[in-house]
Length: 238
Image (tube, rainbow, N blue to C red; front, side, top):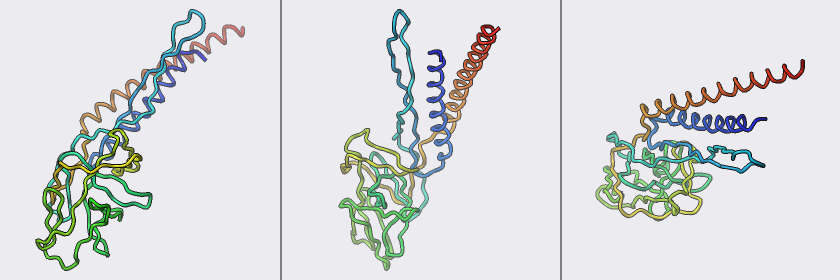
């Protein structure tokens, strides 16, 4: 197969991954705490034998998370929390501790604050947060201190991955940091708010059109190259 065909096929594969990323972003533009992602293209240049020019191949196997703050939406919910600044909530899942910016919680049957999936929210010491069932008022201070009827109960912990680039999306709004986490000192938690997705639908649709056009150009080249090769084969077989 011609090197130009290999190069174009590799490019098409990367564009397909980027289109999937765009589609995922658009599908989650209304998901609380969602972080949009993109694909990083890298160029690999290899020398060829003889006097042939070098071969350039594009790869797109690395995903890039955009951690830009999303807009804060006021809900008035007693257990809706939004982080203003850096940091993530830490929650307990069957697969281990995970990070999230989605701050819509509710008390479960045991009085512990949980996510919509039933995962428990953890405090700064890694302990599930308990809400007294007889509490008449629940308040949250900006530093994450949670009080019931004016009496401090615990402090919600905020965390960042130890390695800034060590953040892997596991599912939807859940992330894992394989190399550990560190506490965040300077961040604010607001009660009665949730953080919206940081996806800009106009930019994503524009990006989708650009990727689609680039893919169509590559497909046109492959179709013409296929016609050229078929023509050569037919001529040689006569």
